[in-house]
Amino acid sequence: MYESKHQPPLARLNFARRLVKHLTLAAGILLGSLGIGMSGYSYFEQLPWRDAFLNAAMLLGGMGPVDAPHTAGGKIFAGLYALYAGLVFIVTAALIFTPILHRLLHKFHWNERL
Image 1 (tube, rainbow, N blue to C red):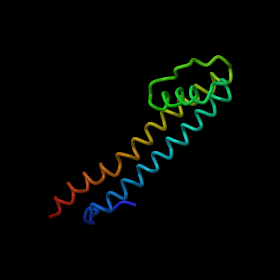
Image 2: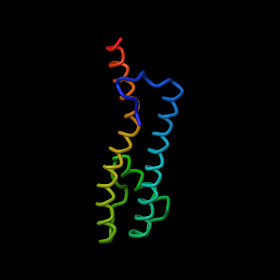
Image 3: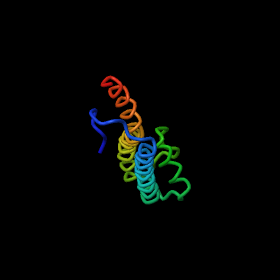
């Protein structure tokens, strides 16, 4: 997927395309995760969609839920979703920063070869 250290760094246009692909994938993961959270909060806690969106978005953002769950199913869902949200945060951060860090490190190593 990425060029090796023996190849020159990617041209700016191709790098921009790679970055857009990574951002699009990260946005898709976030939107899908938001949909899962909204559905779970709506189903288990009977929250309206706006409140379900707020709780899911706050968990995905690392802030924690706004409304504490009241049902047993809602508590289990909220706990599992919180664990999942932490993993989603790590994965999306990695997706966004990987092409940038790879390019930066590749340029350093490419300059050493010259």
